[in-house]
Length: 295
Image (spheres, rainbow, N blue to C red):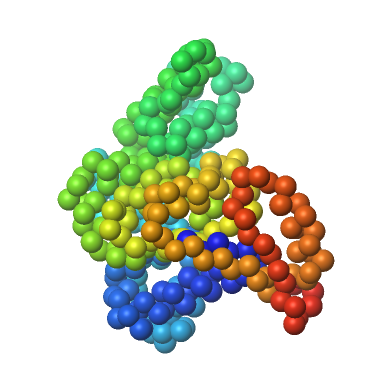
């Protein structure tokens, strides 16, 4: 676990770690899985690794959670109970499907707005729930949302549609229910490296556990102070969860900031120190370089 403050070079650490594994340890790029959160970041990461190695590494899987597991579903579409040419739908397409579903259930679109039901469905999937998890009180709102979820998923199955949240949930089910396939990927990916770990949600964390297995090597880089995506399911608590699930893991702190001046860091530290649940990480500036905050 690398706890890396803003501007401390956390992506550089991942890039050089991967290059070192390939060059110094003679690890096949085929055995390395690198995960980050945007296509741009994944492309830049792979480009920097190839620049260090001075050779292309097409066999290494490097991408976003959705990109990597979409690739897996395309390979194992039959095991995942999908049609071969399934279509991935974006947020706008999902809204259009939900409109059809809601109207088909003779519900009022003003009362049961597609964006609200979209949020509910995606939230359920991000938490790993195939069927909607509702409270014991079973409010009318929750029960009706659960019915919409069920009807929506039936339409997606019939038409070969997969939304973004479904990519991860379907991949988790694929690995969880298929021991042979799970063992295959655990043997293949000897080294798993994850950037921006504080932004992982429940299903992403569960997927990593499936890929790594009991004996795998996983390196994660993150900082709970930089977790700003709780509104889309991110759980900064996954950092503490990692230390419990992998108790033998080394914890390394990168506290030197090469991006911001002392005044900026002092202001940041004065705010974040009031968070009682954070993992203690002190940010310090490069004393020899008091440039502006522009990197």
